[in-house]
Amino acid sequence: MDTQNSAKGGAPLGNKNNVALPTLELKLKAYKTFCDHLAKGSVKQSWYYDDGKYMCSYQTLMSYIKESPVDFPAIQKEVAYSKGFQQWESVLSGSGTGENKNASTASLQMIMRNKYGWDKAEKEKKSSGNTAQDIIDVANGDD
Image (cartoon, rainbow, N blue to C red; front, top):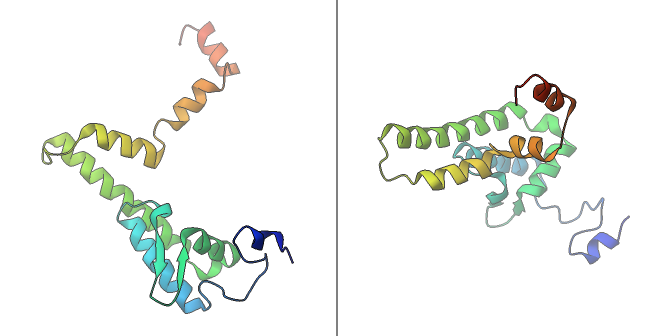
């Protein structure tokens, strides 16, 4: 048993005492609230579960899912993520069509870029240096 982890504020690895959510029923209840949270367009990092007696963070729930994936239907989380995307897309759409005249396009752009990594792939491509395809593109005049 790893006692070093407890010195960092956590329980020893493999600890089964004082588990944040001790029953499958509680874990599934928390999972539902997690999926509801994602469906609103919120990020997983801002989710937590607190029913007055038991608490856990998204990291704890993710570890439960990893330990026992068959207990937590993946489709529910995938649909929740899709609903969250739809939520933000409707805000963007309303801003673009003029239905939501009060929307700050700069703020929306920043939210979408940070939340969904829209420009991450482009930044990684630019920072990766010359690839074989880059060289071929330049040689063909396609840069």
